[in-house]
Image 1: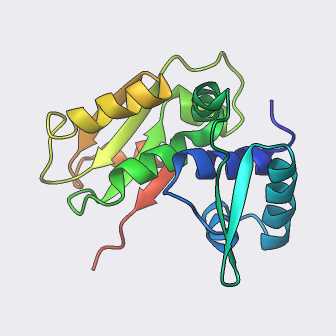
Image 2 (image 1 turned 135 degrees about the vertical axis):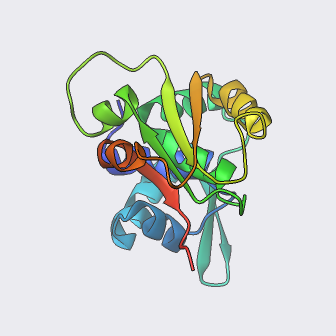
Length: 178
């Protein structure tokens, strides 16, 4: 759908990740070489999709204001791979969450397994102190913004199914435990 996988990852980070990343932050988060990030951002800026603002030596990257298809692009990006930065942005700042990963059919398609497009997004949240109820508002906000159907599963760290689900899943983030 997009010119390249790199372009989709960059757009997903800009439109769903934390606010206004720099080129260096995009390269770190996406693991795309900085030179490739710079080239893709320049193309997207020339196309009117992104804007950059220079602050010192850094370029701050943001969606172009007034983009007529902003909502639709965000939704398409959520389906095409933007779920990872979307979920990371939503859950990373909660210190009670140790890990978040995607599993099920979305993860299978992400790993290249053939099959129909997923109807929903299965998300595992690893925490020993929160319940699905505690995370309900976040899940509803994500569904409203992305138009994805999100199945949120909460697991305690000692759950015996976690290793199997992790192996087939797509990591969103894992907190370094001391």
